[in-house]
Image (cartoon, rainbow, N blue to C red; front, side):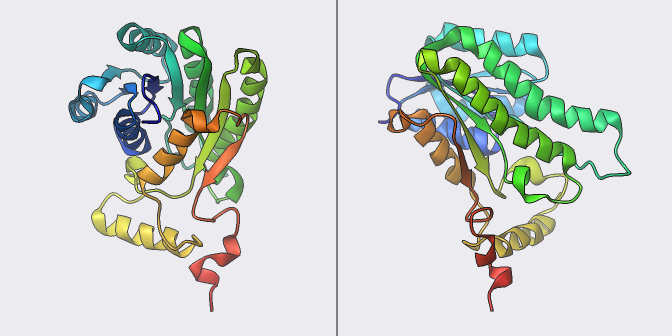
Length: 257
């Protein structure tokens, strides 16, 4: 098992990519603490993950709650070997129709909170630990209406590189995973019904060279790689898990004859 004897903290670990990663980490031998804001989802996730997991209710915008969560994780399972700062929110902020509060809420949750997540975990991290930040292809695609979201996710790339420089003396690695469209609850507002989600998935698939929407497990397996000793000499990188959307966009089905 690739994570035998290791401990991990995953924010937003009660659904989507976070929960898929928690499942995989447990299967690979890790003890995992997950956080989230939804008590019912947290309870269900904890029951599914079993004795190798601890669920802590915490809002990533509450620095004190983050600090408590990191401390509880270390108290239960020992000092941390892995931190996956996964929690984030969507947010449409079109020019001409966006309030300051709406814009700042996206930045605070998707960029400021990951910084303070890392800072909260830092006293509890083992030397040689792995930190993974969850970004998005939206950081580079220029999708209309997503200024705050794109800025927040692009900011993670720059922040990760600074953190990598600061933490390299402790042999702590800091890397970024950038998913493309994936089948997760983040779409619940944009596609609130099964029919709407099916339409959205077809649209994403048509714009993806591999012709499909990602499953949460696709991203989780990349996070596993970055968390494991297989990535022991990888520092300050960003890995796109997007079916070719950013690397070879002209290969998407919509461009094929």
